[in-house]
Amino acid sequence: MHFEFTEEQIAVRDAAREFTQTELLPGVIERDTEAKFPHEQIKKMGELGFMGMMVDPKYNGGGMDTISYVLAMEEISKIDASASVSMSVNNSLVCWGLEKYGTEEQKQKYLTRLASGEILGAFCLSEPEAGSDATSQKTSAELKGDHYVLNGTKNWITNGSSASVYLVIAQTDATKGHKGISVFIIEKGWEGFVIGKKEDKLGIRGSDTHSLMFSDVKVPVAKRIGEEGFGFTFAMETLNGGRIGIAAQALGIASGAYELALAYSKERKAFGKPISQHQAIQFKLADMATQIEAARMLVLKAAWLKDQGQDYSLASAMAKLYASEVAMQVTVEAVQVHGGYGYVKEYHVERLMRDAKITQIYEGTSEIQKIVISRSILR
Ligand code: CAA
Image 1 (cartoon, rainbow, N blue to C red):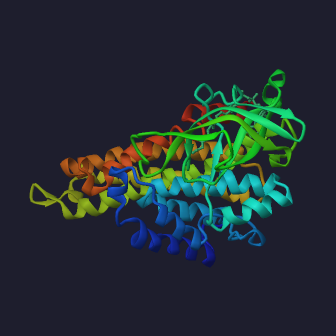
Image 2: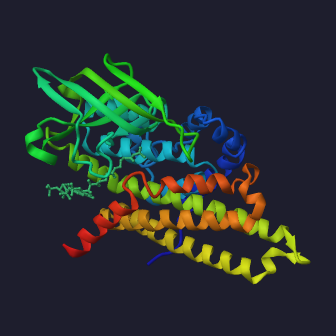
Image 3: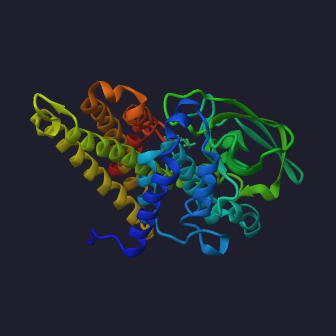
């Protein structure tokens, strides 16, 4: 076992760290307060290669490994989880699926621009009545000659209005259950495709989460990814990797809050000494550091398995489950260490606490991860 990073991985992590200080930290509180999407920052992340990190360079990607990706995700999430969710969705839910299962034509047309960060992608699985129960898709795609006719509504879509390309999961044969589900590429602006309301959220307020409506949208057969009926497997396989990204995001939120609490504890004095010299605070810091380290090991293990070409579905579910629980616990404690200051925006930890909550919900709730884990260990 090797617990060291390569020089390349360290360079990626350091570049991400520097970027967060110069480009993401300024204005992060305002973007959260005003629910403002970080357009400029995401554009720069594309220029630096963060939007298609693992994609083959022949499609404009960075050709990096998953370890580098999670290191960058952790750094960016320490400062701005709204930016990192866009990055995660673009990298692991959109680029990955297109690269693995798209046709050459689809890759040339879409992947090359998504991987370079020129455009953003969205992954559209959830519906008003199909969140955890993802097989209950109501969105339908009916084959009519050389095209499908798409109808339905998608909910809680990350990059909802800022994306240009949408991977949409839809039912093509309702009699076949999950084997009757397919996946299509839809472009913004196609007739009948309407971007619905933006959600007013508790956390990751800088990210644009929308509902999407499809009304008799004509989708050429050539925009289907894989065979008809492949859509559910596509979604599940894509989410196996997506969960590594969200686990890394949760890890970043936790470590960001911990670093702030640690620094604050050395500055803030109470009862004649820095609060870091009180055991009540020391024990909190010890618990936080230990939980974060354990979460980091799970995240890196899942990334490593993926890089080795081994099955990572169990590891990614464990990493996401644990890292998101740690993110919630650590951010709550970081607010507590800050006392009254922790409850105001200026000190960042209240935002991180609000941001942490979503990591227990999207890309499969903690309860769904437990289903994935228990099915795997009982198989
Ligand atoms: N990897 C690969 N294949 C999988 C899989 C996995 N993790 N989980 C299930 N499958 C396959 C099964 O093997 C099965 O295939 P076969 O019939 O060919 O054997 C098929 O999928 C159906 O599986 P199940 O019978 O287990 O289906 P189920 O109805 O019991 O549901 C579930 C399984 C795990 C609960 C699934 O519905 C699920 O993961 N739900 C959560 C959905 C989710 O994560 N949504 C997140 C939305 S995306 C998002 O949040 C993005 C964003 O914008 C941030």
